Amino acid sequence: MHHPMYPPSSAALASKRKELAPEPLAAFKAFSASVFADGALSERTKQLIAVAVAHVTQCPYCIRGHTAAALKSGATAQEVMEAIWVAAEMRAGAAYAHSVLAIETMEAHPDATEAHHDQAH
Image (tube, rainbow, N blue to C red):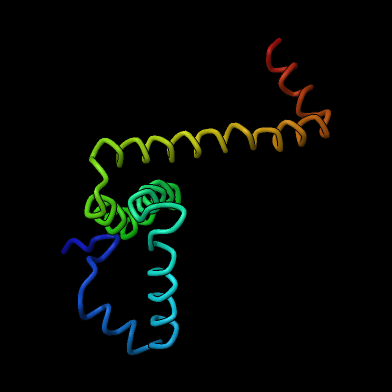
């Protein structure tokens, strides 16, 4: 029998989460409603940001939920895809930027540059 890596969300699971921790759930829902309400940024813009962040954090539930919310708030499919490309660029950019740590570490270990030099000859 095939078991999905991420089980589908369901009313039963939502009910179980509420049963196990009702106060934090209520607080989280209030926080979420406050965060996504129109403010200096529109709900649409905030949902597009959430789509990008969901792709960076790689949460399948967030990807589905915030994509649907972005579309419901008026975002177009093209805007959603551009938000995803922003996320992809940020992930790639972060990997590249963090190479400074590897370079710094390699430069602190003379063996690393010598080993590479020896292999080349």
